[in-house]
Length: 175
Image (tube, rainbow, N blue to C red):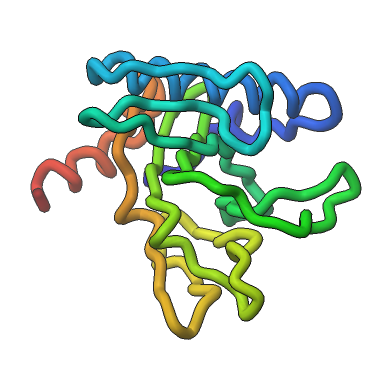
């Protein structure tokens, strides 16, 4: 991933996080619609943010915003209470869709629930932290998960491409 631009270091707190979470859900919905997939939003949020018709089957998707923490990015897989403690049960979904949305990039990662590592109690790991330019640390000795393998969409602003043209040139010459 190309380095962040100054405008991308913005930290959202309080009510702003509600807007960023909702914008991630809208980005996810727009992505699936652009692929010709039917999307529905449950009336009540019980851990499923979107229903997406894939083939002849409706799949349950939990949309999670990717949170930047001093150099790494956290991909959360477990529900937490308002005080930040883990809820007693994991999500009952088919996929997790993680969204990184900044003024200069949109990245979407679609991870099947069956690929997400579990702790010794069978719950999803809380999160996997990833440094985008190196291999992520793994939270499970039994099951490795490289989040980068689940990237399904990447969009970068013209400014970001222009400022990091060497990164994008390297991509085109190595592929």
